[in-house]
Length: 550
Image 1 (cartoon, rainbow, N blue to C red):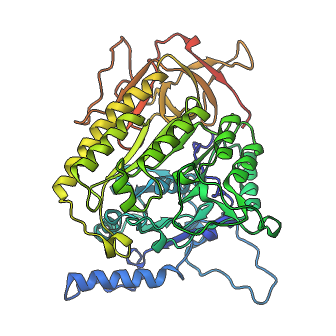
Image 2: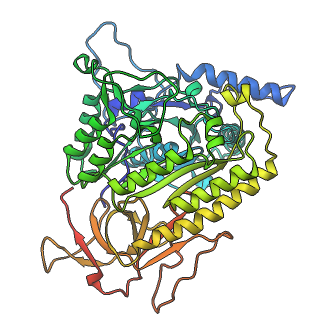
Image 3: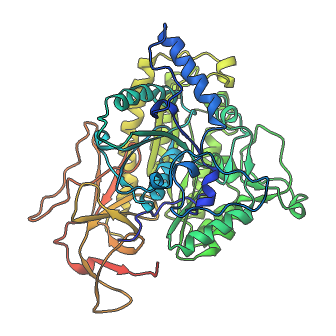
């Protein structure tokens, strides 16, 4: 079966030379020649500080992903007398997976989820197997960031637990290796300086890769047969390539109507609309997505391009953060509730049938019950298809830390979060019901995680679709029976919408004799809604396969 990797990001090539850009640190605490003390320190706090200091000091100079996993064939040495061999971190034999099992654990935001899939695709290609059982793992990889305080705290606790797991590992098994992973995107950093956000302090100012290098990667991915790429960046639609001198005298950036920036207007450079245009032209059969954008950077030219190009997914992530103009001002978001709602209407007018998702923070500094109710009303008014909701946690270095007071009690934050989740589920179910009865193009990702008889994929709106793995008639060759494979497109008639209930169970599924997969449905994002088609008893004509050369 061909490679089950339909969401590789455009900024990440599978070619090994790119792996030198990956920040990869295999903790020396997890190796036999560890330099960390094996005995307990006088104080747990001092021990933790020491580990963090040692971790940080070795991060920049530590081995990269290239040293952990590289091509199986030895590389020829450079003729240059100044060239140095990479540090002898792993032997050539160790670089190969040889059916060893890897356990992947993700903390933080959607960017980290994407990074996890990239890492797995590379490991899979090198001969590793993936396991969901921690005790079976020969390699444990943690994908995280320091953007949200909870993720950062969790990762340190997790490392301590895994060190114990390594200590108890039988000597008869291969040594357990543990790693922390982060991968670069097409642009990094942020200049917006929202008062709650630590990104500008952890990832620096905005800087973008040259358009030419991104297009080269997209072409390589297309040549390898990939059918979907995602342009990934902290503020991806703020992209600005200033490497081409001839474009540095262009006019200033066009912002969304009614939006302002917290920084001086930037002049020149190749903008996101140019990048999106060029990427979408590389391969008409390759789906293009992008995340995570800022609402202020959706000028008409971007919306028009999404509408015109069939291979640019009609799905936009539009982080609102709050439904209260007063809270938005305190957050320094650069827009009011009214301007945001106007943008939503404009997007839906410009791109009919567009799927919208959003981020929300509840319990921000000074948020009143009235502010909370305004956020609830925004959820009802917009009816997002997907959403990511969080309780506020104050981070050091941020503007809020220095100038505002985290005065909303934790129990109030959690109560408000539950209310937002409940409302979101109700409204998302209404929004997604319009898919029922429609035939949609679905990109096959692979087998359903909980059923060997079903496949899963995603529609244009990025919602997961479950459908039977059955022989279908090839649309291009009438009379030929084939089975859908990862990377194929299939036309699926949506017959039923399921969603997770607050107690974790599924909404009722109309039973039918022989039905096998009502219980194999998995969620999309968090909190999740998902789409499924009827079981394998559905007439074969309901699903037709469009076989594309890959």
